Length: 191
Image 1 (spheres, rainbow, N blue to C red):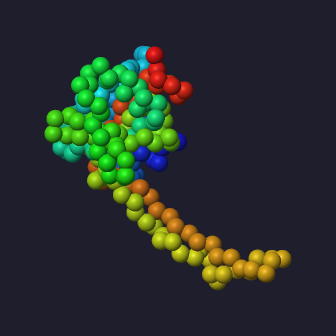
Image 2 (cartoon, one colour):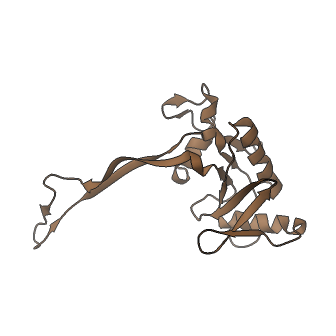
Image 3 (cartoon, rainbow, N blue to C red):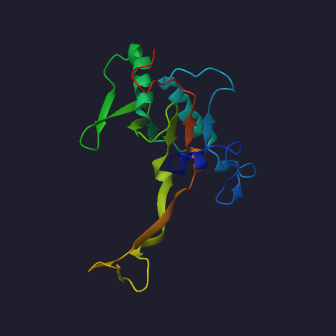
């Protein structure tokens, strides 16, 4: 129930009690930083200063690592642009690695790129240290059955079923965090 399993790694023991078979309340470094409002409180404006505070908390409360990407829904990026336009002297910083410009938030010597993902739940931002995440294969792509080819009844052909499985792992969950309870509007720019 979390985007690509990220929340189950990053959120604390009040949401997911264990990670990799270990108790998050016993091993606090298995939890990321969760910045949200108290229950029942109104949602907050999506300002870049909130992201700056989250990144600084992650660096100070974690192990000194710094997130390098902020994953967010399109609606939250629109909210960020709207809320921060009066503070900008220039256009948002653009740096390109994928053939087009990526918006980047600069915080002194630290920069965090914004990555829009339509699968990301609206109203939150994942601040991730991508150097600590990886895919670990349990079974590389290979035929699943023996014999490898099987006859398809009533057809003049055979089929092969291929299989690949693995899991995403984070070596330092405490170098990541979630900024939650932000304003958003799925249809346009929030008021």
